[in-house]
Image (cartoon, rainbow, N blue to C red; front, side, top):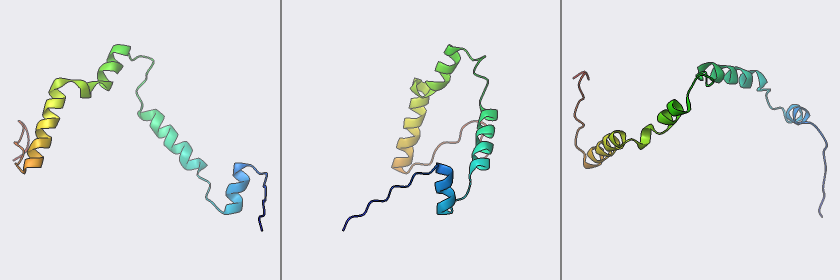
Length: 86
């Protein structure tokens, strides 16, 4: 036997019916915090944004990352950088 039930309700009504918590205050708080942490993009230049987004494409960054990866894979202890505590 096959039975089909169609329920027409809003997401809010479905949430209440299933007993799920209302996460609207948490969602609002997280969005407010995220917006506060974002820089003001109206003053950012396209060049500055591109430089920040492509930092990983710079050869010096990639070389340092690959060197650290291979040292970790070989079991060698990483060398301390200038200013690091012993």
